[in-house]
Structures are given as C-alpha cells and as structure tokens.
Amino acid sequence: MKRELTLYNEVKQIGLLPDFIKEVSDELGLDEMLIFNLNLVLEEAVTNVIMYAYPKGERHSMTLKAWTEGEDVLAFELKDQGKPFDPIKEAPEVDTTLSAEERRIGGLGIFLIQQMMDEVSYRYENDSNILTMKKNIKA
Picture 1: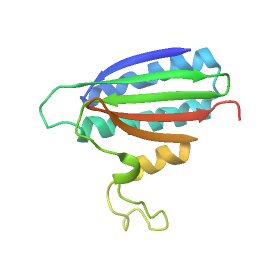
Picture 2: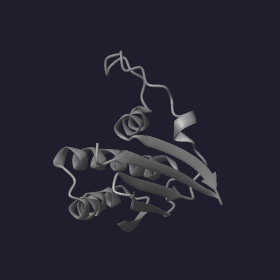
Picture 3: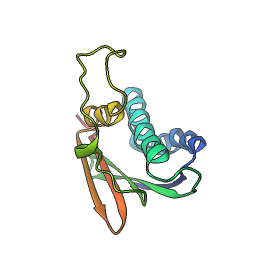
Picture 4: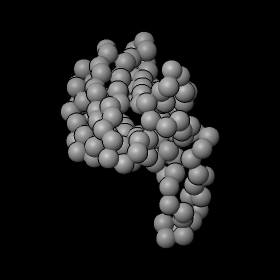
C-alpha cells in the first residue's frame, strides 16, 4: 500500500487529512481508535508545518506519504521545504505533571506524536524537513 497527498500551508488544508487516512485505513482494515489517533498525529504534524515552517503570507506545498512495511508497520512521511526544524531535538520539553494552566505553550503536539507512534524520526535532506512516523498496526 502506498498513498501520497500534496497539501499547502493553509489551515483549510487540514480538512483533507481525514479522507486520506480513511483511504489508508479502509485498505488496511484499521480499527476506529487507531484511525482516531492517526488523525490526531497527522493533524498535529501538518499544523506545525502550516503555522511555523514558512514566512506568513507565502504559499508553499508539503507532501504526506503513507506506506506499509510488511504487514505490521504503517509509515508516514511529512516533507516540507520550510525552515529547518528538528521537532525531536528542538521542541520544548513538556511537563505533563503540570495543569494545563501552568504548562508553557508549545511542544504538546510533538509530545503526542511521540507517545502515539512507535517510531518518530527527523532528518534534513536536500533542503527539506522530513518527519517519519511509524506505527505497528498488528500489535
């Protein structure tokens, strides 16, 4: 299974994600809770690119790819040409022991992605940010 979606750095583009995930999940027979979690993870990742990767007012594209590795792993790759940012190393640490009011703003999306996916990696290659997220779908 392989799928690809091109998105632009506009908030309304987030609305394209559920259909993309539905196509993937229908083909793989994923359960509702996993589909919900994948929607959340991909929405967080795409939103970060939309909000922070490019200067305000400029229109740019990003690519979201999905594929399977064997029968057990579903992988996603989000690729953009925005300013370099390693979310794994550079996102602020999240103190989940604090209440929402006490917690500093930022970083929670990356934290959620890392908690919900089995493997998350980042690389900067050929002027592109590449975030790869993998989930074991047969666990």
